[in-house]
Image (cartoon, rainbow, N blue to C red; front, side):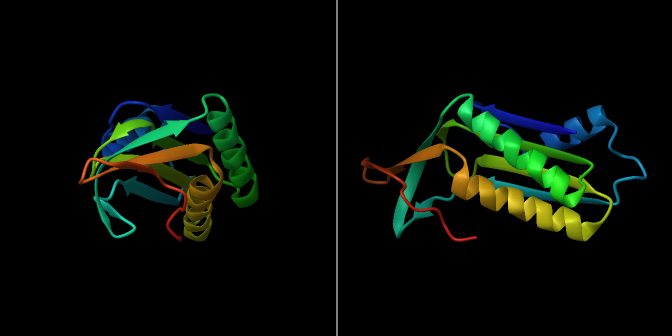
Length: 147
């Protein structure tokens, strides 16, 4: 079971996670581990203060790539479920950008798969970031932070 959502509006990752898990009836005895990653926007990058960011994506292609990456992870780690939610559009510091949640029978698979999905998403998914700096100028982000 998997769900991928690319959304243009803010979300509370913890409420989203709780609601989704309740709808999927994942509180069962099969999944012994849940690993969760929530990424939020920082107010700095490359030594500069950042006041906002506009995150663009390639509709259709982005979702397809995320679905493919998640399906491969489900097969590789025998996952019970995966949830990926990613923001696009205008984002402010401290707002959540991404939620990755993985359910598995065992913690090692859950941790490894969650990290793999997040790292692959960060380095391979077609998202583009344009930051607004404190002086009002903008710039495209060309390098991702190391994992």
